[in-house]
Image 1 (cartoon, rainbow, N blue to C red):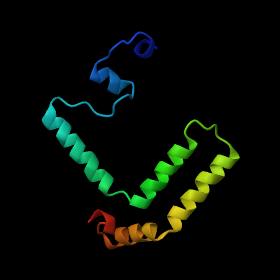
Image 2 (image 1 turned 90 degrees about the vertical axis):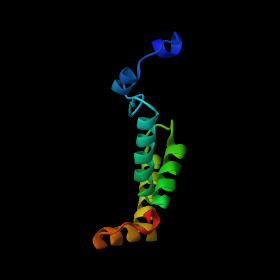
Image 3 (image 1 turned 30 degrees about the vertical axis):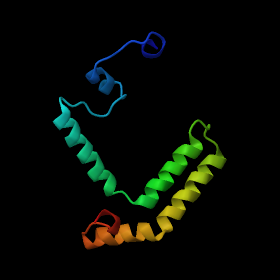
Length: 103
């Protein structure tokens, strides 16, 4: 409450302890290193799956859980898992190579 109502500030370490930030770095070089590491991880994610995840988040944010919402999420997940991108990812794992979107 203090952050919002009184405009209180907190240290980066405290923000991390409370889950407000994911990482704390000491300098610009550390920030660049963390950014590169995150970007490297993100490029390994299947673009269609990322898009579907974004759709679920934007479509359900603030909506109370319901059977309709769960059905919607399950249907979208089933479509992604049955799609060519998922098959390509599984083939890449079996072949011990990066998927096409990550090359």
